Length: 93
Image 1: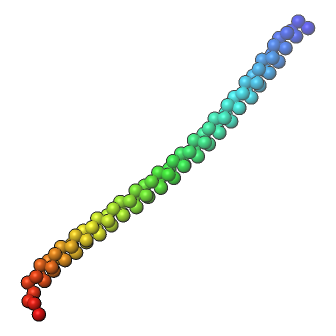
Image 2: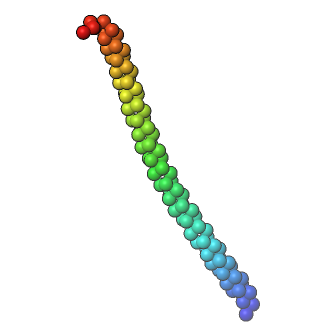
Image 3: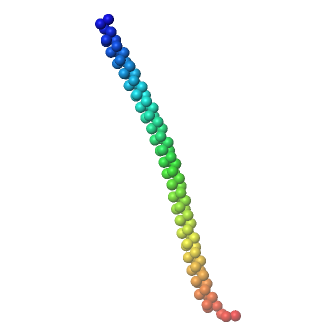
């Protein structure tokens, strides 16, 4: 009966170890949750980056169109000036 204290000490150590294991499992569960959140937010960030790239591409495309149409407007304006100048020299009928 003298070794009874060692038995209870061993039982206490085992109980503490189980408690620590339970805490460790809880922390693991929290870590998995945080990892899941990180993956979700990374996916959102990638999606929004893709959207931003697409809209930037659209903006460049529309800017190119605007420049092209501005060039056309200048060309037609020049044509109109030339035509007006030519019209001055037309004989009056």
